[in-house]
Image 1: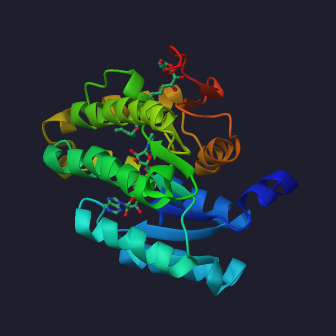
Image 2: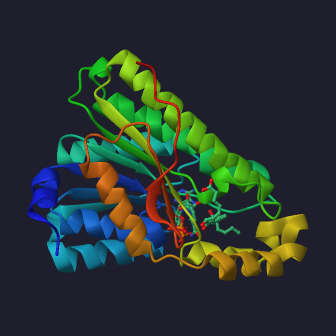
Length: 268
Ligand SMILES: NC(=O)C1=CN([C@@H]2O[C@H](COP(=O)(O)OP(=O)(O)OC[C@H]3O[C@@H](n4cnc5c(N)ncnc54)[C@H](O)[C@@H]3O)[C@@H](O)[C@H]2O)C=CC1
Ligand SMILES: CC/C=C\C[C@H](O)/C=C/C=C\C=C\C=C\C(=O)[C@@H](O)C/C=C\CCC(=O)O
């Protein structure tokens, strides 16, 4: 049952979630709609996106969401998705750059989706929310991973992209303070989560030369355990609704639950 405070915080708010049709993004979309936000589901997968939209319409009504098929690595398409969201709902308050892949074979694609698109999505979010553009402010959450605090030998480029997402997000949080953007920027770092992404480690096309380590990855998953997408959505809602959170790196693990990485403070 959503808290009254959360509903009050999100009623009338507009959120854009990339990779919102499945997995973690789908759980976040569900929680946002459940708390009376309007949601733009941005995803490459048309069938999953249409299914997601149909489910949201049935539960919350057709005016609660839109589905926009988009490859986030296509900068023009992502720009158009942001604009269509504002055209549909009138404004934008929350951006969640969540879409991500594991592909150590086409590692350039991994960088495009996991890092370049997060940077572009952050800048697009600022164009539609930052006071530097005459907008009303908002919140951006970028999705990294616990891989950002480790050196995973089985997926090194994925690991690099997630390290990059953390570093970029915290740097932009500091820039937002210095520039008085009025936009809070945080990063969410889950451990292993039970989603379709984990199935990609079964495919040589995704792990490439590291495919021979797939059993080691499974041992890691067994060791650290799998989280439910709903717990990640719970952490996401805290970052969205807690105005004191800015420049935070939220970690979510089986061992520690929802907690934060300790850093030096941002610029005074
Ligand atoms: N599943 C896990 O164990 C963990 C996942 N993460 C991160 O969480 C985020 C979401 O991952 P999951 O929900 O697990 O994955 P998922 O594969 O279940 O869902 C990802 C969604 O993103 C979409 N997507 C992929 N490439 C896209 C593109 N180029 N343009 C638009 N949409 C695209 C997919 O169609 C899918 O609907 C990713 O950034 C991932 O790196 C972080 C830590 C752990
Ligand atoms: C093939 C990759 C599959 C999924 C992608 C996912 O993003 C990768 C996660 C990689 C590592 C997960 C590590 C989980 C760690 C924990 O659960 C912690 O309890 C303990 C480990 C280290 C703590 C390091 C720290 O907190 O700084």
